[in-house]
Image (cartoon, rainbow, N blue to C red; front, side):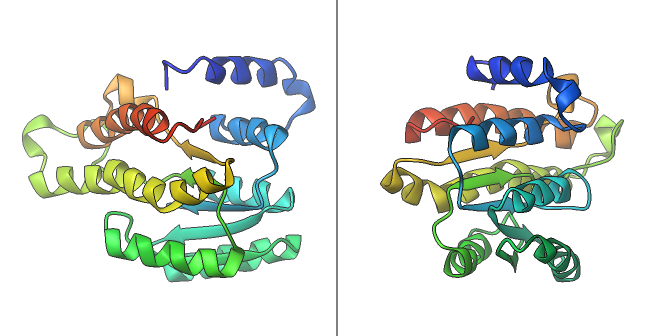
Length: 212
């Protein structure tokens, strides 16, 4: 979050050597920093999709980290898992709706059995209306769904991994953000991402672990 000093320091440090790095998203840059601080053995990407989520999964698997994938589409999860297996890193996946506490708990139990203790969580899930959505056209159910996936889902996933991280004395949680959270390009999506920023800071203080 904007209140954590290490974030801009890491970002500036890595950007200053950008000629040595392939194009990276902010979350991938943070993963580089995390993996230079400690070597996670098993990571879970919750809300993985064909864009940044898949790119993060490929980066982690290439670095030798076991990778767990969570999303709603079993077909896509199977496809991406098959692609990642060529890296020889352990890969597992679990289908879940990231607004559903029971499904999240079950998914993490499956991944933990397959990969062992999870010491890196990347929460990448979101749901919301289109950019530029009209104020009066927002459906309350769609708005609530955006918060249930993008904000509550982050809390539920963190609750699933924090106990073992605290027991081990090591771990990291990364919540992907969006500039829309401060620019307001989509009321549903932007507000859930802004809420995630505050929740992120609160979780870090409550659990006494660093997200970066």
